[in-house]
Length: 72
Image 1 (spheres, rainbow, N blue to C red):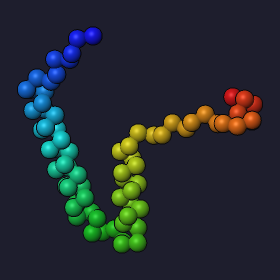
Image 2: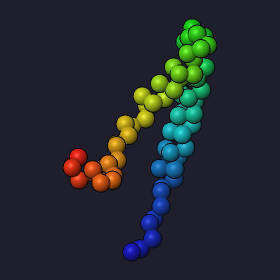
Image 3: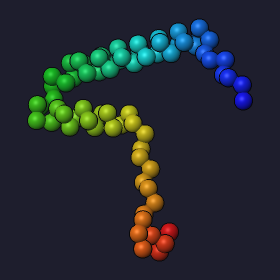
């Protein structure tokens, strides 16, 4: 199989721009004034809930063990 030609300069610039935008958006969300209105005791849980909403749902693995065949 021949080597990949790689990314063009335009594609590299697009990736760099998007990563910079992601970094800035992360800073904007993390430093938003909303977080000053959240009580300190639930601040971390609130941020983690927001983080999990952005992540794809985990697909549960198939059960293992002697009862796995019955569950399937």
